[in-house]
Image (cartoon, rainbow over all chains, first blue to last red; front, top):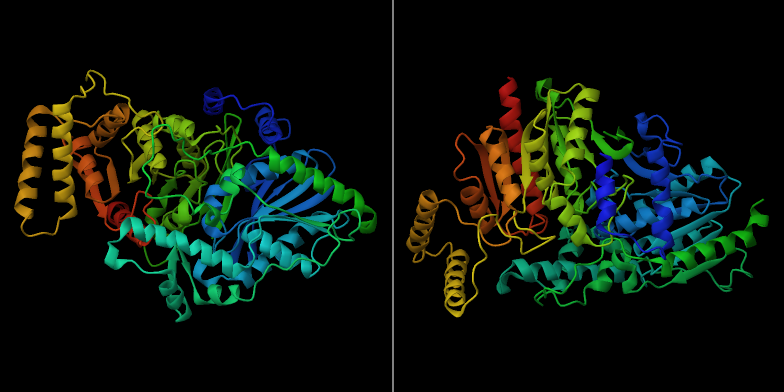
Length: 321
Length: 303
C-alpha cells in the first residue's frame, strides 16, 4: 500500500516554493509514521476527525482538523456551491490541513443535501445551509469557547459567511470571491445547464435561461450539473445579497475584522465555476493544451490569507479573553 | 444511515463512508454481499453530482451494505496528490490504485464479516476495479463498470504491443475520414428507416471481420486493461457495464469482451447523457439500472 503514495510522489516533485504543498502533507506523513495515530474505529484520529451530526433527521458531515500544538484560534470553513464542491475539494482539504499545520483548529463540512451529508438537495435552501453553519460553529465552540473564531468561505460559502457574520457569529471573517448575491450566483451557474444542453441536445430542443427560470418559478425542478434546483432555492436567492459590515475594513481598527479577497485563474478549481464559463466549449483541445491543474500552487492566496488571520487574531484575542 | 469508517492499510489511512443496509421489505440474506464504490478519477468519494452517494443509498435501501472510500491522496484520505490531472490519470490507467483497492476489499470482508464485495466505479473507478479483480480476485463477487475508459488519456499515443503504428499517408487519411463520416452518419441517424439496413449490414460485416481476424483496436487503447477485462470476464464474474451512447458500448461489447466465452456481462446503454453519466437525467437512470442489476444478480441467488 505504501507504494501508492511512493509512486505518486515519484510522478512529480512538488516545487518547494509552495508552502501549502510542503505543509499540507506533513500531517499525513505524521499519520503514516504512526506517531499520533489513534485507534481507527469510529473515524477518529488526533489530527483529523470526520463524523456526522444529526440535524432534523438528516446527517451533517464534518471534519475537524486539530493542530499538533495548542490551537491559536478556530476557523470555520464554509465551502462553495454544490456543483463546485467536487472540483474544489482537493484544494479545500489542503487549505484545512495547512491551517491546522499553522496552529488553527479547523472545521469544514458539507451542506445538507450535498456531498457526504444526507438529505435531498431539492429540499434544501439557503436557510437550511445557514442553519448548517450555526450547527457547525457550535461543534467548533464546544471544543473551546475561549478561542477566537474566524469564518472563511469561498463562493456561495463566502456569501453565507457574510450573512452569519452580520448576525453576530464569529470574531473575524475572510471571504474569497463572494458573489454579489445568491441570485447572481445561481443565474451565472445556470449557464452550465445551457452549455450541457448545447453539447447534448439538438438545436430545437434547447431552452434559454429564462425558460428554466420560469420552470422554477412555476414550482418545477431544474437539473443543473446533476442537482435539482427548486423553486424555494430560487425564491430565497432573491433575498440574499452580500451583506458586508460597515467600515472600518482595516483589521487594526475594526472590533471584528473582515477582509475580502478575489480569486483569479491561479486558484484553479477553487475559482467558482460560473467564473470559468467564459471559455469556449466548442473549441477543440489542442495536443499542447494541458488539462486543468489538479493540485496547483495557490500560495499567492493561502499565505496572505493565513497571515491576515494571524494578524486579526492578534487584534481580537484580548477581546475574546 | 451513514457512518464514517477509517481503514488502516500498511500505515496508510483510508477514509470512507458506510451506508448501513436498511431492513426494507426484502430478505436480509443480501447483506453478506456489499458494494464498494471507488473514486471517479480525481473526484472525492461522493463523485460528480454526488452520484456515488445516490448509488450507495440505493444499495443500502435494497438491503446491501454499501461503502465508498477515498483512495490515498484523494478526498479526505491523506496522501500525495500530483500537480497535474494527467499524471493522476496515467497512474490510474496503469492500475496504480488496484492493490490498494484489493487490500481494502480484504479488510472490509474481514471487519464486516462479508461473503464478498461487488466492486465498481465510474471511469477511473471502473479501471481500478477491473485491475483489482484481475490481480487479486479473492473476495470480488462482481463488477459495476460505469463508463470504463479503454483509451489512454494520461499518456495518449501508446500502442498495442506487436502492432506497428499506422502510417499516416494521404490515402489512409482519406479512407479514415470517409470511414469516420460513414460511422458518424450511421450513428447520428440510428432511427432512420432508410439507413437502418445499411447500419445493420455494416455492423454485421465488422463483427464478422472481428470474429475471423480478431478485434482491431484503435490507436491509444489501454491494452493491459483489455487483457485484464477479458481474464475477469472469462471467470464468469457477473459484470454490469454501463455506457453513455452506442459508440462506447460497441467497443466494450464486441471488441473488448466479444470473444470471451462464458461471460456474464450485462450491457446497458444510456442515451442523452455524457461520459460522466450525470446530465440529461443520466444519474437517475444509472442508479435505477445498477439497483435493478444488483437485486436480480445477488438477491435472487440467495433466495
